[in-house]
Length: 188
Image 1 (cartoon, rainbow, N blue to C red):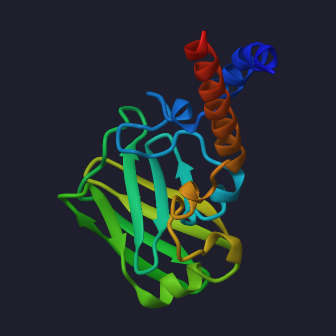
Image 2: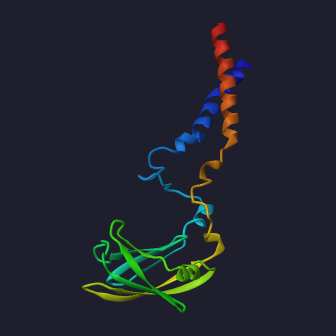
Image 3: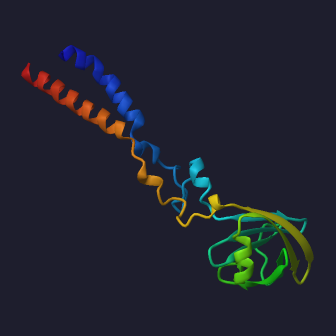
């Protein structure tokens, strides 16, 4: 019996070492702000609805949060945020202007009617008029919004709920074989 455990021990150790969860959390598994660099496909659906568009002058990303639409506007060539632009957003029969928030370097739209419209299921065509001191442009974007993207939970809320219980069984088996192997060695 001891010979069996002696031969099995290296294989058990390798099996256990290759599947320990702390090995997966090595440097590089999380970004500098703790975000997960690799996400499961089920988590992709819980991200906030967003749209992106660009032209030769500007690039723009809009993210719909429950109580506001956040717009990030950058210069296309330098990728620097554009401050103090006039942004008018139109969709269907509704329009609203965005307010620049200097300390966060983004624009905010808090029009309840517009937000309610954008949070409805379906495809929304958005026209954005951007006017700065140097430039003016007209951008179009499309927002595909479905019930699958409107979860009230954060993307990482249930990320750590899955535990591979079989690794516990391998660990117990490794422990028991170590104890038996240790007793066998101490008896000699």
